[in-house]
Amino acid sequence: MAVKLHHVPPRLACGAFILNTGVTKRSLDVEGATGLRDQAANAFPFLKKVDPVRFGKALSAFEIALGAALLAPVVPTWAAAAVLSGFSAALMRVYLKTPGMTRDDGIRPAPAGMGIARDVFMLGSGLGLVVEELAAKRH
Image (tube, rainbow, N blue to C red):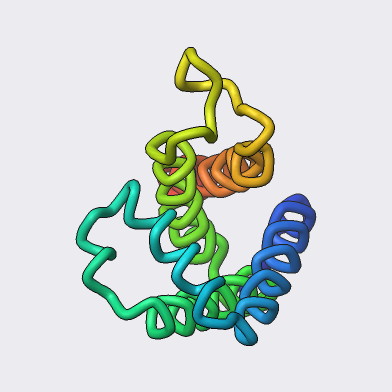
């Protein structure tokens, strides 16, 4: 199963970015892991019960796996894009649920939210690839 040429740019951009963030998180200290876990718990309260170091290691491993899947042409686009879309949607939920990330309207990013608001582009890339793959299967 070959990757279509026009799938390469979003897969490469998102894959390299996510792989890098996953590798960077491998060396998280307890404070950094706790901060990430607490931010994620704003959107997914059950995560508050997860050990921060365990959360950081799991997030790092997941991001490395997702980044590698996006970069590997042997992984079908529909599969890699579906996981990218789900992950990016979860990040958008964190953005929307974390106090101080958005302006008063609850949508536009505040200065503190600019870093995570960029993930909307990954969500758009993932959904675009999924929609195209689904449409291609119908024909």
